[in-house]
Image (cartoon, rainbow, N blue to C red; front, side):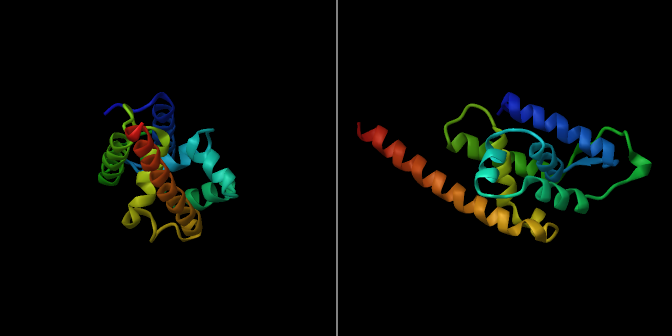
Length: 151
């Protein structure tokens, strides 16, 4: 499944961040860092939820390893990246969207607890809020789909 233009822009930014930090692999964390610097559905939601994006970004940035010896090398996709993108494609498909959006990737990242919860203690409250929002969003989408089906 293809990615939307805003999502592709975030992925390009994530690649630049990974390259700048000397990471040999592109991680979902790089995507989050890239996303937090841009205006998109996910960051609008976070702001509405009262989450300080700068603080979340600092927490992520602090935890991501840096490798000076690899700085400037083009990163390859990590297994974690592939898992998150696969889940994002499923979310987009289930939502009847024809492309993966930034919010799909963000939602997929919040669902993959094993990847981030042990690393990003400072962000647990934010992700709990996001999970609750996503659950409500899915419920409202189902209600809307039911209304359309009945009409």
